[in-house]
Image (cartoon, rainbow, N blue to C red):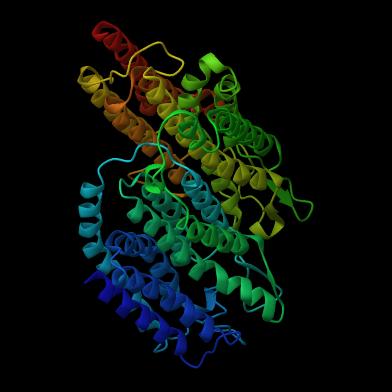
Length: 577
């Protein structure tokens, strides 16, 4: 059933590529043959897997395609919302100024194709679950497939960059954050789901489903990344940009990973002795080196973003600076300190767990800094609340300002922090493999006992406090409106949401984690909550008449409860031992 739905969806996508998506409009180049191939290739791969009896591979392919279908659907719906703002020269390139051009007949087959793909995923999920039950559990020796999530993050970063360079006045080249709302949502969703899909493929008990997941996600990424690359090569006044190249290369590499062996047993090799050691690629030392190095680079970029100007004036106007830069500097310190200890062998496992949490601090602070920069392009005047209420009001019009180097460094810090977090997760997997092989807890002296249910009550309390801490203001000041989760949701709120998601995710993993892993994750979560409380002295002090808000006390209480829970996890494991 899923193969039939995917095939029908592929035919619909191919038909949409052959018809005009905007009434009276035309593409910037003859892209139809390429788009038809990109649409039909995944369906051909699924049908081949079905014909050859590889149901697990077929299910994985469909799930990989389905995971990215919502983001691709949103990209196409931008043509319906306002096609003049859509950067899709393979489908439509304006030759004059247009205001809300009407959708053409080609748009509806594109929408139908993505919806059919989503429907196919519902049927493929059951088949994948059956394959996982038959496969049992992988032996833990992961070869090149560990690179899948790394490629997913790289592709996600590429999706956030401008798809091409443009000298065409009717086609502006903007990154995901600067583009129109619907397309921005699509790119953000794709950037989040691509690495997540690769991570799920890595953890699949069935090697066939995992391979299919890589291939499906890779083919979907190619469908997004290849057309802008070709447009940059052949369309006049367009040029190739790194973003689409990264997406295309990552997609191609993910497809290539589907042809690699997923575990030693699959090749019929013995999982003992030297062969078991060779199965870990690369080794634990290199993963720790990558984790610590990437975290330090992210911290350095965050510090540069904090100290460099967020805005630059295009004229004689005074340049305001956002107080959020001090929070970003604090986040850099909170990330850099545990990253240094990742290089110390006996402390590396614990420090790595802390890094897996504290990267969220860069997200929390970086979003606040970027929010201030975005205000100069979204509003007619700079919002004084983002730059301190003691500045002259009204401030000069936005035409006098543009993004400064602080924005670039902050964006780089966000990307590096996300990659460092992924490296920390993979390092934890490798550490666990090593400890399982040695029948001992790595670098801890504790056995494999889980933190267990003795920490559930304080964990729930900590989670409630964390939700309240990130959802309520840390400080109040006259004329200042704090970004929130329930109201006044803005660009900075995405940082709050991201940091909260990381903290809650760590809480959820604690009961199933080994004692030291649980303690390190909780210590990192406590640091993130402490950073949230630190907004009062770091940011609030820049505002006249500021005072502590309820969020400050909730964040402090959440940090204390989290640290107590960490102590309980280790103490309970020692008593059990």
